[in-house]
Length: 111
Length: 159
Image 1 (cartoon, one colour):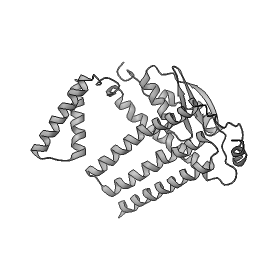
Image 2 (cartoon, rainbow over the protein chains, first blue to last red; image 1 turned 90 degrees about the vertical axis):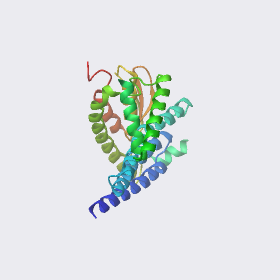
Image 3 (cartoon, rainbow over the protein chains, first blue to last red; image 1 turned 45 degrees about the vertical axis):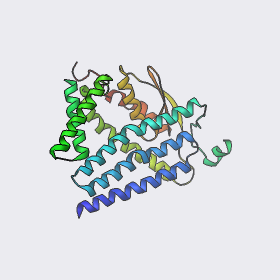
Image 4 (spheres, one colour; image 1 turned 120 degrees about the vertical axis):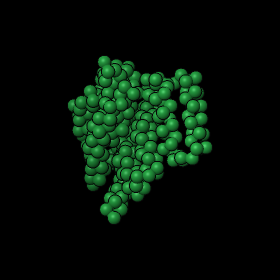
């Protein structure tokens, strides 16, 4: 029962964080900042999902596999993020830079 | 020595994925392990990079530290996303020194920066690292943080 509750807390929180990542992707002004919003989905959201599923599976082979999935995401997701950012930079996409707050609509007009 | 440990690890991996205990399937597992190790030896990819044994214990401690950093950064970025009104961000590009002796150390450092939400590595050169940060506060935190020192490196355990 306790484990059931913990599992559902993790799954719900993970789902909510996925939504937050999506919202961030729409609210942020340019490619590079959107990459940061996706970072949430990459790390905490995925980890919470796998933890929640692990609680459901208990101490079985399935949870070992879930842990392995976590390890692979942990190593590959920063590599792919870095590749995307590096490709955008080499392709000549200039990041929106600012020393103070950014007005979202103003930045979008400039692009 | 390294070959034997690699073979044991691969067999353990096979067992964790399959979970079979029958004699026939175990024999197949041993055979496929031996074939894999033979091919890996022929390709000579069993070296200190594919198998960073010398880092193992320090890596464990480092992952705890990294997990804490990732949690903190996540909370910060989530707050920025959910704040209503104007988006409270101030994107920055900065160059940090990457004072690491080995390629592996540099890669772990660059990957850790990217893994932390709010900072993404744009470019990694010989001794410098170009980072895009979501906010000024995040950039300052990264400049002040001792992450570069926390990253484990070749030979630090045994030398």
